[in-house]
Length: 137
Image (cartoon, rainbow, N blue to C red):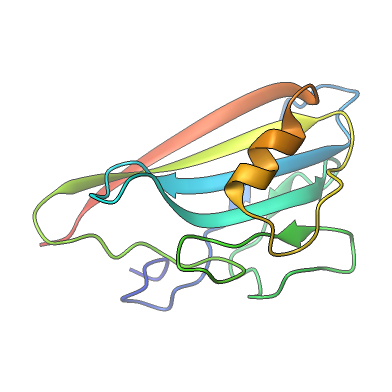
């Protein structure tokens, strides 16, 4: 519950390995494809340094970080992470898409998923997906 909007609403910790040697930056999109209104973005982070290897829990709700990481605007129209709050009964999938990029994106904090998807075209060296599911009773 700590990562839900009903709980503490803190971003989850994430770790990755096996990036391509020439990756310089990463982009992360966390979304829920099971909402009635369409695919819902909960978290958008980009220009994550490839050498970092992880994101700790509790990323601040701000657009920029001292190491160059930026956060985009989620479907709540806020910058940063906002956790799930599914309607009772239905199982929802929460998808974390991680993209290894050959260069940082030339975007600003508060950019949208569409901005990121367009900007990564031609720069994706590899991609990974983590899918979690949850049902609210």
